[in-house]
Length: 317
Image 1 (tube, rainbow, N blue to C red):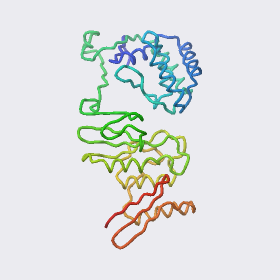
Image 2: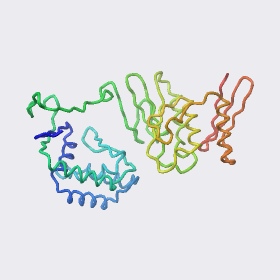
Image 3: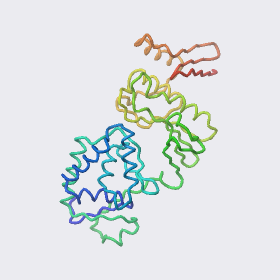
Image 4: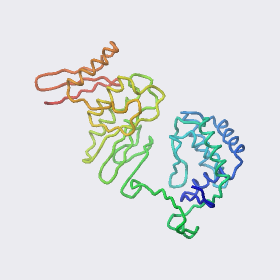
């Protein structure tokens, strides 16, 4: 859609400044500044230590000393390259596994070229006051990206750091790699996969702990979810699939199933179904004898060894 005049508005002035910066700065100088900042702070894919050092430096600066290009460089190495701030406008997204690659560079150059050609004005006001800033008539195309319902007062969202504490999680190491989202009266337990899938089950070693904490909590309305973080290894092996199906049977809901596993994570229909699938995995790896299922007349005993913990599940038929 072609228009003589464009307006960009974001109530967060930092986001507005970030978008405007691609119009304001020379593109070559912008790229050079970002690369120098990356080199200075040794930012690299998955390096949490250098990322946090760069983020802390940026947040420690007074507003007059902050260069928006610093923030852009830090965002490139943050989790999912998302933009997130605390109540004091400190950037607080965690380290991620993305980086400043050729694809991002191409998008930066393309966007900068287009936004420099357009007649764009930048605003940072509440949308209810937008008519006081620009003229709106029947020929105006207005696009609003409204806040989602989950951001209302009915929802309490917390990102779980090791020093975080609430009624569900105490202030110590985050056992189970859990995040808790309470919406209305429902507590949603979200267990995050590990970013490194090197061993047979390294990407899901926190799952038993997450399930135990979910099951043990007395909250009446609760649901259990599993979220796949970007993984450096193969999280779609037959063994992983077997474990995901066990999790599905135990009540896990999968939020973002990888394309390689689409349609495959189905719950087991019976104990015999579990035994058959387990035997297929054991046949692929004769040394894989960590799980034992014993059928008795009235009861089923399942013994599984995972991450050096012996768990026993007892089910009465």
